[in-house]
Every structure is written in C-alpha cells, then in structure tokens.
Image 1: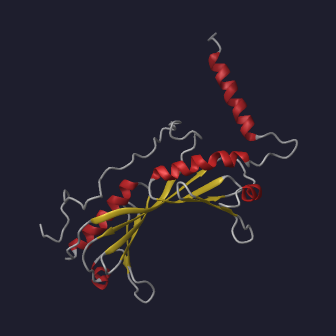
Image 2: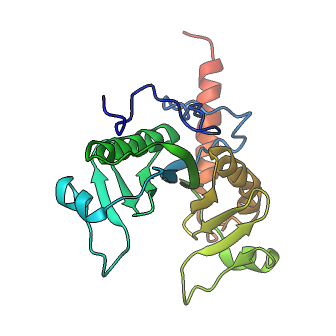
Image 3: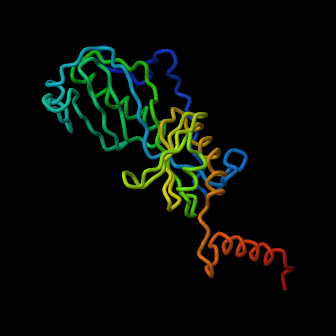
Length: 244
C-alpha cells in the first residue's frame, strides 16, 4: 500500500480516541437517572474538524473525485459529499477539513475517514490527525406551549426575544455553554455543545423553567397534559385490578 493511503488500523494522533458515547436506546426506554424530564434530545447535526496534514490542490480534487464542487471565486474550499454516512465536507488547500451532517459521533468520525481516504487515493499524503467535534445540534419537543414573553422578562440576563425579527426565544445558558432556541409550540433546538452530555444537561437545566412558563389552556378547555396523566393513572388502576 502506498504511504499516501490510510491503512484501516493506522493509529491516530493523541487525543483522538475511538471511544464514543453510545446513542440513546431506541426501544422507547428512557434512563430517568440521566434524563429526569423523561425527554431525550435527538442529535440532528454534528460538525467535526480534522487535519489531513498536507497541502492540497483543490482543482485536482475537483477534477478527479466524484460529487465535488469547487468555485474559488465564491468559496475558498472544495465541497465534497458522500451518501453513507450522508454528510458534506469542506476541504481547504491548507489540509484542514470540516465535516457536517452526521447525527452521531461515530458517523462523524466514519465520514471524516472516508473523505480522507478519497483524498489519499488521489495521490496526496493525507493523514488523519486532530479529529475533533466542534459543535452539536440537538432538538426535542416538550409537548406543551410556552409563554415566551414571561420567560424573556424573568430571565432577561440570558434570554433574548424579539418576535418581529425571529419567532423563537434565544436563551444563552452559561453552564453548560449552550444556546437554546425556544419556540412557543414547545419545540426546542440546542446548539453549541461539543459533547452530547452538554446537550442533555442543558435541556434538563431548562426543563423546569419551561414548565414554570407553560401556557395554560383557555377557560373551559381541558389541559391535554392533565388528560394524558389521568389516562395513565386509569391504565395503572386497570392493571392493578385482579383478573376475572
């Protein structure tokens, strides 16, 4: 094998361990010790960077590789895409690369390695160094509407709400350092984390605040959450009854 290609077992630079936090169970079970709210934010996008440790001729890459766009008048990087994992890479002539679109840490690493191998096969001495996750975006739905005006007034040091400019409230949490977009519908977007634990912790921190500013139904309307809780209690009572 040529020295320019990445061997499957090639060691990485220090600090790039293959250890990956497992994704949440998909069988509906939620670990309440980790997620007391009972809600698990789902990762929607991971942005990672890697250093290929060599200079790159982007024109050569654009000419010989598939699914590559390169227009130096518009953007200084070549844009490469792969289908599995479905991701996009921004490749710079300096050898730095940004990989976006993966939904797990493992897929982000896998995609970055695939891009590096494609470039290595074109004859560049590409390495795989300094892989690092720079940003994670997660989202979830608390299933109840939120009074954004009251939340913005009560948490003015952290919250910004200008509905004329943007429909969501921007909440800048300090610890962990996460930015949350909170919408009146109950949809939440969390961004700025470098670890999924930060995304999870930020949501657990904000969840009691969201429940405090839950928008109550109009007079005469029944609270759907109360209806759901009553249905669950009735189901539990039915299970407790002895079989006929």
